[in-house]
Image 1: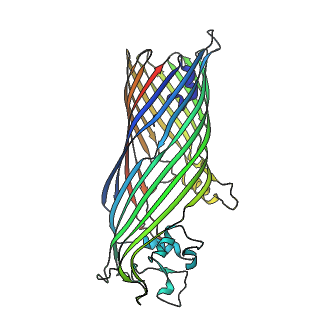
Image 2: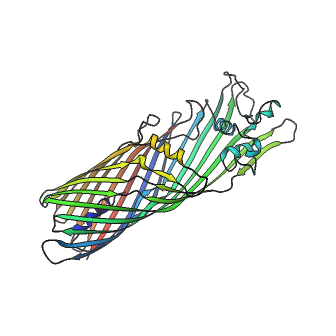
Image 3: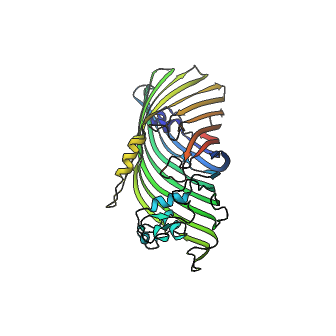
Amino acid sequence: MMLPFWSLNPAGLGMFNKSEFSITPAMNFSSTSSDYLRNTTPASKSVFQIPGLAFVFHSDKEGQLGLLGGSFAITFNRLNDFNRSFSYTGSNSKNSIIDYFIQDATGFDPSTLAPGGNYTDNPTSLAYNNYLIEDSTFINPNASNKDYMSVMGTYPNNPNDIRTVHQSEDGKTSGAQNQWTFSYGANFSDKVFLGGGLGITSIHYESNKVYRESNFSFDLDPAFNPLDNMVLNENLKTTGSGINASLGIIVRPVDFVQLGLSYNSPTLYSLTDTYTASMSTQWNNFDYYGDKSAMLNKENHQTEAVISQYSLKTPSRVNLGASIFIMKSGFISADVEFVNYDGAKYSSTVGGISYDTDNAKIKSLYQSSTNYRVGGEYRFRKLRARAGYSFMPDPFRTTQNNVTGEITRISAGLGYRSTKFYIDVAAILTQGNTTYRPYTVNSLDSPLVTTQNKNTLLMVTVGFPF
């Protein structure tokens, strides 16, 4: 999102010479193009939002040196928008999500997967109760009941048996990360500007994924067709709030140069996850045990709601910036931002719950990174023209799945400003690539979805100085 300049450095509030109110309505257009097994599937979503709202209250002090005045601001900003959708489809001859269920169930007694067991409320348990997997005594009474197989699996240890399955998934996410900020900036002799702020954040995130497998075929037994399809529906909702602080300074050594330094503390979040899942299987009147005792047709099972409460500390940020003013014709600015992504940390106050493994993984996967931004404004009488570019490099220590996680953002806008009114129209294009694995198996053939993401934000800011 495009934030007010004082959101990056609260010292910018010291440069105000009037109070003002502003509001920013916007339309957000997101699109994805997902590549899976040589198939490309597009998806898109659009939503209306109000990503910005600001009240600035300015006060002056008499004199020409020392404290000349300051401004207090109450602002609302949408930091992240989670409204996205994606789809992919393809035929897989190497594995199925059933292979993941077999792998995940291995080592568990069947009673723990059945309703009321200790390993329920997850997709693997749903697969067991939908007859997609069975312990190995199903075919060999002397086998271990902690090993698993499937009637939809290939013949054991026979490399000539190839199973092909059609796979697809539709996913949607919604919600946002918002922040109310209370900040103050002071002006000292029009040379030094100091500021600080307190941010109160909120998160509301919802995800729905519907994964399907169908059209099973087996090279060694083409007539074998017990299952028409399986559908796994997963829902995740994350809500919570957090708090952070910011400090900043801007120095104007000469009239046409500004140098800035700011620090944004980690945000300390208290979050709650709520997870539910359901699975349905459509069998073709299949005689599961071979004795007519279980003729399978429509099966459907769902989990109870799994609720997790935890704390999250996000990375801190340090920003260095400079602006050069070209008389009254405009300015050029550039800044760098240092982010310690490996400083994120999970924790819990609930006894017996440890996130040590997760935090160690964050340390090993992520690294500190430097983001870059450049921009400028041209002024002609009451008109304004702006443009900007930002680059956020991949925060991972090593490239994930041969796809870099870098993000680029290009913005452009036009504005009109008078003494009692201003309006700015802007467009922001954000692009980046991501990867996603619907499941993993103990091989190099775990399915991989590569997605090209584009997001266009069209926004109008209307302000009223007073």
